[in-house]
Image 1 (cartoon, rainbow, N blue to C red):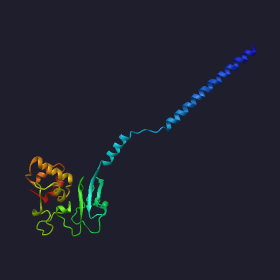
Image 2: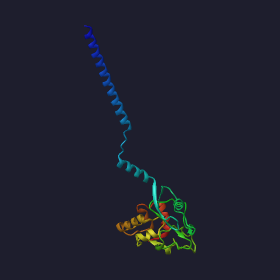
Image 3: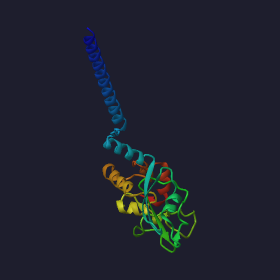
Length: 213
């Protein structure tokens, strides 16, 4: 009987060893899989991520063009609420720049163009581009821009003339004025400009001294 008992014990030991080995192999595989999962990269939808970045980049910003007597004439993107002075600091004024006619504290509007004149340059006329000119005081004999004889007729002016001669009116607003005139008929009063989309009280106050009907 003894040899048989020895055989049974040996078989049981081998079976136990096999079970232990199998369990260890499974545990080891579980550890390997867990390690792979931990190192797996997180996949991000590139399309949706790009859309989010684009939206964030545009929110709260405006785009303006600076031209004329500046060292870096180009289109600039600034935070909403920026002033003329902020745009000029980015563009860099040239020594011959004439800024006396510019309102440096004026808040910028999206899509507008700032043209910085050179000393001695005539500030009025379509050939000089859009100007920012301070209205001449009553009785003044110089700087006739904004006086009755030099005002722009909003019922006959082209979009190019409106863009070129009215402060704060860029190509987009100039086209809106012409389109409004085409669909609603000629303006009855200068104040009718307020009905054009994008021309609020502040912008109307900027241009009312430069227009007529």
